[in-house]
Length: 582
Image (cartoon, rainbow, N blue to C red; front, side, top):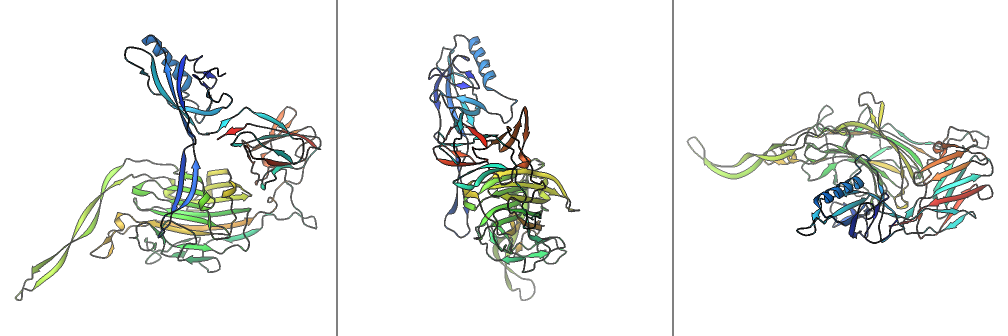
């Protein structure tokens, strides 16, 4: 319990009464770390603002340790280390209560505990400033329990930040299906026990009809159309051409099909350059769908930079998702990137390497041809005419080579996305390049709940392989060709399918009772989990929960109407929540 201003409580340890230290000052930032994202656009003055993302908070705590002897100071130093250092709890955070907010709890961990320095010469009293890092910058008030007395239930949470309620419904009868939703947005809901749809004859309806099935092995104008300008902002230019293969569409080999050179356009261009094609749009856009495609990427020159990139497009032909496998500068390892949401509200899902082999950096040189001065000399023979010629000379350019490699340097990946409402479930698998068989997961059943401003509909997709210039691509002034020819990198797309999802999609189960009278169903919006409590047993209901369930949060200070099924006539309903402050 906080009793004064000169103290704080970390994980139940009072700094003053348990550790005998004095808290001189606590400096808390007003806002979390703010990172702004923007998108450069060729030939545009300025950039496109993609918005702010808000990160962690770091609190500086200046403390004074009072001591009369060297031994007492050493003992108190050990006590501080024992209290604040948690070396074995990876990812864990701990409670922190500050004296100016005794009823608010923050969660984090100490990231800096510097050495103690004397406050003045001749005394053992010492001071230092601790850094307390809070990945979740919100402050939490004590938990409150709210009883639902009407349906829908109008409620205004305390606080100013988002809070994740935990709902409990104690049933008065057996139920096949149950759930909750917010009146302000019917896309915000949890639905458990969804039934199959049937047609007028009682047959099970196909709620996931096939919309697209394209093996991507032809450049037929009825499927893919090459474009000369992108319908949305991209980094770089559109140039080069495609070719079809037995099982994919790739950058065209140049000058012939057996060549290891590829047509990405003008390789001397300072930036990304490559062709783009757009698939035929769906007749109607989809909000709920199941989407699969594959991309193949190979880096064949140690310093080469190419990428294989897919853009999803909405009904307005704007980019709403991106998937790219991209080489990095100076021989660094290739990375995979995945983003969902329109460009101004893009949400990064994945960015990284896989099975990284981090080699030692080395210094190297690349030889290029430079143009020198014109010289005049007297030729041989009887006439001894004067001739003028240009001198060309080799120049070695010093470079740094990281020599890093990883799985993405040479890979084929399958991307499987299932979107219902604002809930996305993403799988990314390795694919055996020789056999085409789907392999192990890279990302398995990752659930993404999109914010309202990141939600989108789907119409079609675009494919854009590209290469980036390096020193070797600079033009040789003597031959007017690149200084060095090398394998620019192989990039292709294949196996594109889309199914629409209607009424929550197909389910294997027939309608059945999911909970009985006197059972309790728990909807945990903090952990995105659902449970059945029957007597002393607790069972997960996640398999019965609709893929489109978003587990909606509530906003402090904002009045919301919450609807339940079954209602208060057939269940006792209450929920717990902790008010938060930004």
